[in-house]
Amino acid sequence: METLLARYRNITVLALAIFAQLLLLGYQIRSDRDVRLIRVWGVTAITPVARVVHGVHESAAALWSNYIWLRGARQQNERLRAEIGRLKLENQALRNTLGATERLKVLAAYQQNILSETMVASVIGAGANPNSRVIFLDKGAGSGVKTGMAVITPDGIVGRVQSVFPGSSLVQLIDDTNSAVGVILESSRAHGILKGAGLNEGRIDYVPNEEKVGPGEKVYTSGEDRIYPKGLLAAIVLECQQGRDFKEITVRPAARLDRLEEVLVVTRGVHQDLPDKVPKPGAPEVLLPPPPIEDRDGLSGLVAPRTAAGGAGPASSAPSLTADGSIAGTDADRVKRRYEELGAMQGHKFGEGAPGSKPPDFNLGWSPQGGIAPRRPPAAKPAGSGGSTEGAGSAGSLAPRVPGTNAPPPPPGKPGAAAGSVRP
Amino acid sequence: MQASVKQLVETDINRLRPWIAIVAVLGALLLQAYLPLLLPLFSSYANMADLPLLVTIYLALLRRSPVAGLSIGMGVGLAQDSLSDGPIGMYGIVKTIIGYICSSLTQVIAVEPLGTRVILVFGCYLIHQAVFWIMERVLLGQAVAFLWERALFLGVINALLALLLFRFLDKFRERI
Image 1: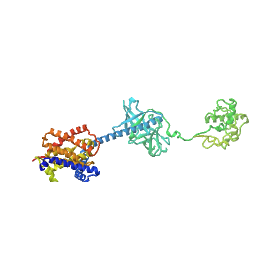
Image 2: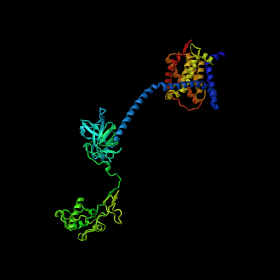
Image 3: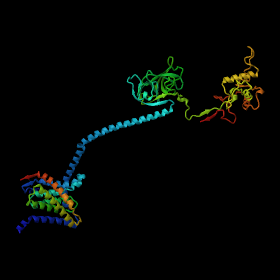
Image 4: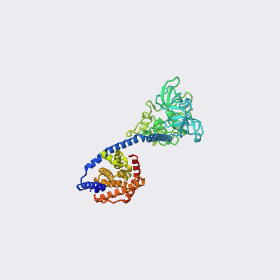
């Protein structure tokens, strides 16, 4: 028996081992219960090692991510920095393009608003001499630029073209000490000459001391220099003092001469009014009615029969009536006609009386209240000669005027007639 | 327990230090259980290898005693069972048989040549899968199909992997 066991020892042990495990399996399957003890052993034996392996793995991952992989991160950082720099440059270029577009839009709008013909040019450089105030434009003779042309911006005049080259031109700024511009002051309309003083300043000469000039007053070109068209803003008065013979006026050029980028070259200058002469938008426009005939000189009663008689009087002095009933001609013509009428009424012929003879009474019909007395010959008042003379004779030939106008007082029931029609 | 393991490992002319054997078993179990978690991208490849089986085969081949071999297989199998959610004893029985076979073969053939090792591992893997499949169907009543092609392919993979693993473990062997 002992020999038998020794001979089949291995297979017996195998059978026992398998049998024991089969029993274990059967127990688990039969009772549907787990053998917790074996699992606890297995897990207890494995989890500490697993924890160590997990820690090593985490450390290795951290070492890789935070240290070893930083070599790549450094290169990536450099690449990203380069890309940021490139994007900054690109952003700046786009901003410059946007700014240039906005400025060109302003220039285009200004081009359409002024009468002069202009051409857009870009400033490509400044003078090498710091004392000379000049700039270079990218337009030259090839673009039609000629010497003496004015250079302006929407803010104000810039200078004049001093030299022209095939592809560029040299512009002398108005604050250059050799520059001179004919200008006119906004409020006093006094003329002067704007001379450059360098460093974005200038002065205006030859403005009389009697003129009223204050800081902030705008200075426009007068057009007298035959370079800059009249009516362009040139400078702003900074300071004004009484001088020995003329005022000493210091001004600042209206254009920003130190920040020029795009300018307009005036290829054909057209004078224009100063901006303040143009009616402000929205201001009411007052249209006065034409003065009636009797209001001109109180001689309507004398004039009417002559016109009605078909040239009974001197044809040369016969006033012509316009379509609206007013008398054409100047005040001197009317005075002459009045004297002729007075002379004819009194039988006097001009040029025939001897020296010392009594002249005709030129005050005939004159009243000290400012009107002509109602001394009208009946013959000079034909029927159907017009209703305007009737009212004038009864109320005096010269009715009281509306202050500030030549209009008569308004008739009853028409209060707005004397003030004229107001058209907004 | 340490003394028994020491006695188990040192009874041949080639011995493996006991702590290396324990580390090899724990490492195989650990990698089998946690490698898919550590390397998610290689989880499908990690599941192809059966490292506890390879370690069992190596230790059983190193031991030339069938009892020692089946004991090693049973221990590794039960440990593998304890880390799985299935009933304990499935891998234990299979690896007990594998350990016994491998230890028994060492008394018949020379297992040191590489070709022998490859064929041995390939055959053991197929036996392992076949026995496990039979136990699933018989003991657990699960209608699981046996995938021959997959088993053959993974057998080749594990045989090739065993070459590398055995060569690595051979470096820790000491001749008595």
